Length: 286
Image (cartoon, rainbow, N blue to C red; front, side, top):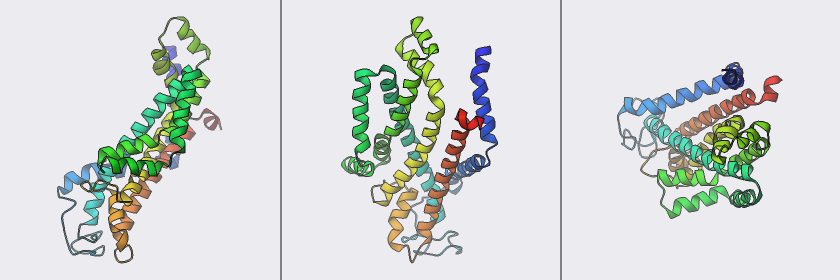
């Protein structure tokens, strides 16, 4: 019972600190609103985002289109809502894949050390020096631009920072007394890695995972802007990329999805900063 209280104490204090952070709460509110619109919006609208709704480049506040239409006559509000679902889904899954790869390789390298650490760090350095966007473009081009290939490409090229952070945390904990106690009673390596050390190393990894979502959203937008998005799935990046030639005559078709990306990434960044302040013991004491 006492052990449970000792574990819950820091997490409760972290939650209390997070809830006292106005910026973090603002980010949370913005992100919840974006998620609600992206998830519930398509059900409410029930229309095809690729459907031609009005004359091309109809300006905002028109009778047929509140946010105007793009160069084909598609409603910007409808495409914005549907595109949010795709962009957020790709960003979340790609970030999850990236963090999973980084934590797995970093945990193994930091726990075992020696040759295992040397081999895994050389692999990490190889991916770290690769031009991430260029490598992702090659992967997407080779296997055709679909949501699956885009998500995999983003996850594959963006795990190195998490791996290094996880390695450092595991190297810090692997020789501490509570870990040696687990070894002395015959605990397996898998148990020590995933059930003993990892829970203690989670705070900075949670912050890293949060920030990875924003990075993945920007990455997906960049690929779509370059024409490497899935043409069959509406996304914010695809909206910007397909309308960039008409930015002077139809600025709204670029500005609104760009603003949606900005607000979402800003919300995630504010949440990440709030988590960093709440989960970092030194900042919490300050």
